[in-house]
Amino acid sequence: MKTLIVYASRRGTTRQCAELICKTLGNDAQIHDLAEGSLPDLDDFDTVVVGANAFRFKLNKRATRFVKKNLDLLLKKPLYLFICSGSDNDGARKLFTASYPAASIKHASALENFGGRLVSTDEPWLVRKMLTRMGIKDYDTLTLNHITEWAKLISKTSLVAHYR
Image 1: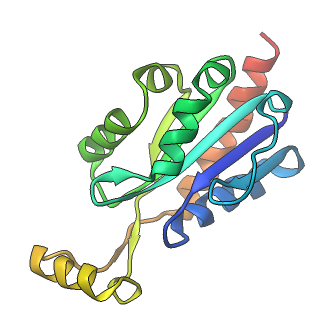
Image 2 (image 1 turned 60 degrees about the vertical axis):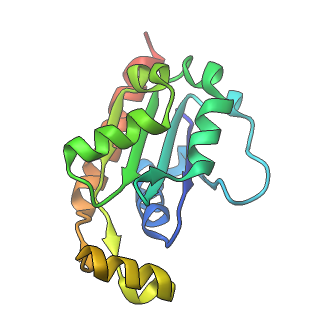
């Protein structure tokens, strides 16, 4: 079972999650940053995982473009979508539905929000100022165990789907 994990990350949190998923899945997983070069051939993979960061109430455009551009192929494979966002469940659902085609959401074996991380000192001055005015403080809601368990789910359900 070959799994491709593609991700778009702004400050590294989504990359960290994608790397942990790849490590958990083992040798049959390959990871690709959507900000870098050309993608491997999607036909070479049985399962696809797409990760995106949320910023300013939207998902990363690289991830949304990837899903829209490759929708026909993605609908033929087990598909898993995750985001890194400080949003609650309702907010995460809105991010998914506003950013990805309805067919991809309906087809996805799992949608997950792993939480997020905000370190305001990493942000540009203007963003820090806006965050302060909005009353948004630094946070880290990632749970690495949760990400590992989700990756194990991918491994199990992809194997079942492959042999149907």
